Length: 291
Image (cartoon, rainbow, N blue to C red):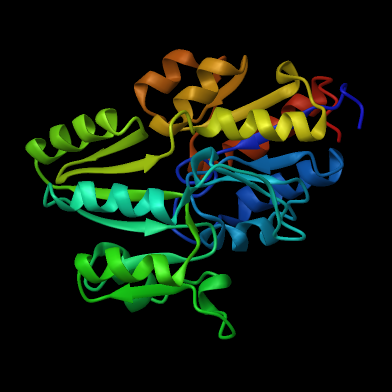
């Protein structure tokens, strides 16, 4: 592949999706137009695990490997094989689980193709009770969701059901738990990304130095694409690294203030199909997206 190729990478939630498992007709139309005119030069850089993004890969006809699980994985969407991964093995994740269990902080775990959750957790409601309209969740030939009756059972049984894990997701419903979690993340020399909510925070914990830029650099190396030939789009805290590391950065209008302050340009709102519209505009301005 020529190192003159130019590609785009977009975050998903809040950037091209404003609902959990649905893309607007306008957004889909503009992004597919870009795909057609750029030789399918769009990829995704998401905090989602592969099993909850596969539906969008299909809808947007993504051909390039995607960066998922916040940069801990780069996966070929055609073969479902890894281009790169930086995951916890069984021994590593067991130590992490046991340490956080001591803090009384609830958590769940994921890898790219399965989730391990405790019954009645928020993820249980999302994946099991609401029956999310996601392709891999609805497959009948393999188990995607493992549900345990308690954290103790998950700690002991999850490593018998899976070989590796991308992260552990902490549910911190008080400031004290948030502070405790971040101190332990630092002590264990891990990488955390914190999403704040009125009721507290969700903190995703990865191996050290894992973030979207980490995954994107692996992808660029694989595709032989220069960093200056990458255009990134985002809206939230886990996109900050991309905006700090890559010069062609575009924040949707609904993005957090920090991201807007780093962006090369602030574009329209996620509900307006801003990413697809901007990409098509860039083509008209002479940016030769191609791979």
